[in-house]
Structure formats: C-alpha cells, structure tokens
Length: 324
Image (tube, rainbow, N blue to C red):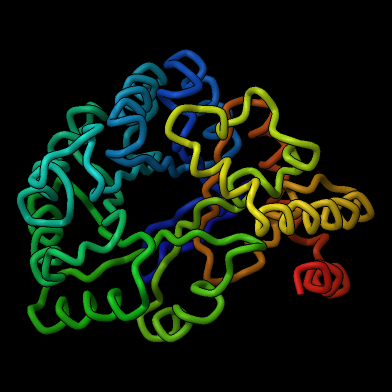
C-alpha cells in the first residue's frame, strides 16, 4: 500500500515513491513498454511521474504524453512534472536554454504540446542559471502559475543560498515562492539533504522529490562484477557515467556496495529495496523517484515502502559503519 506525504509547503499529496523517465523513455523503451510501466506504477498507488525537456531531447515527454493519453486516466488523479534549463535540442542556441523569462515560458509551452496536456503540475528549474537574475526566474514562474500553465514551481540542484534568495525575492515582491527542490540523495550523496538544506526545511517546509536513490544504478548491485551489456553506461552520451564508475572513487563505492548487499541479505530484502527505504527514512524526503526499464525492476523497488519498517536502529548503524 503506497503512503503519501505533503509536498513541502503545499497541500498537495504526493506518493512516497514516484516514477521518472530519465534515460529510459526514448532511449531504452517505446510507447508500448512505457504504458505498461506507467500502469504498473499507477496501479501500485504512484501518482507522480517526473520528466524534463532535456530527457532524450524532448522525446521522453512525447512518449510519456502519448502513453498517458493511451491509458486515459482522469487528469486530476496524477501529477506530472517537467524541468527547464538544458533545452530540448541536442545543440541548443543561447535563447533555447537557461532560465531567462523567454526560455522558461517558451519551454513550458513546448512541454505542454509534447505532453498533450493543458497544464504541468510541477515545473522545476533544472539547474541554477548564473547568467540570469533569480528575480527574473521567480517572476517568470509566477507568470506561468497565474496563467494556469503550471501549479507549483521548484528548483533542482540549487544551493541553499540560491533557494533562500528565491524565497526572499518572492516574499519582497509578493510572488509565489518555490515549493520543492529536486536534489540527488542516496547512501553515497548526502551533504545537501542532511546538512545544507536543514535551515530551509525548518523555516520554509521545502518539499523534495529526490533523484538517483540507487546512485545511477551502483546501489542496485548490478555493477559489482563489471558493466552489463544492457547498462545505460553503454548508451551514447553516457560515457561520463562509465568513467565515473571506473574511477578510483567508483571502485571504492563498488566495494562498499558489496558490503551493503550482505546487510540487505541478512535482513531479508534486496539491496535496491534497502537503499530506497533508507532514503524514505528521512522525513524531509517527500518522494523518491524510481527509474526502471523493466516491470520486474519496478515491482522489486516498490517493495521499499514496506521495507522501511525493517530498517531498525541496529541496521542503520551497520549501514553507517560501512559508509564511514
């Protein structure tokens, strides 16, 4: 049974586990498979589906939009997101990327066409834009909300200082502030969620839709004995991910992953379930975004909701001893 949490300072109820299309939609699976995976997630209680203009150069949003139309669910029964910054072109021009008012509004209109919908529930600034004043970005997002094209806006991988600036500007100008941040968070990446953002969580009740709970697949354990042929790391454009895995830091993570796998085996759950459940233990996590190219992967990861209760203090201590 899926559990739900408020999305930060809003009244929106969002499923603790959600589904994202990065890498998979448009690169690994087509509309038919996408529809099956979305249905599996939806039937399990997931009500949030994450996307971005940059995923597969816009094709990911097109596939999700067609799949959702095919499934014919009530539009008010689920939440979709998009993210703006990198652009939807392989080699975007200066006006086709960033967080200027021009790109934010044009990118939103383009995403609406790809999704085949009248509005986007959550709209994220995919990265901070050092070339655009934060005030311009806040004003543009406020305009989209007033036009009814988006309901909530947020940030992704912004520093605490940048998020705070957005809140202060919104307060000063009586504009709508960000509701959520989408940071990376997993057993190997913890600084922002557990330290940097704490004052913002306390003061503004910021929501979080965290990505990469399995550290780009490392915490699935599938790289413990090398890189499988069907891995995303063998896809064009993901060479950087392979280089990171094969680095000295990557090798250290693999060794720690092997030790973590033994803990998961001892408590009777899979390593991915344990890693995702560990993320859910953090009460500042609104939802954990899952990624899967196969229904079997998704079904296994969905068990993480029940696995949370298995992670008692002793198990958490064992995990921390491995991570040091």
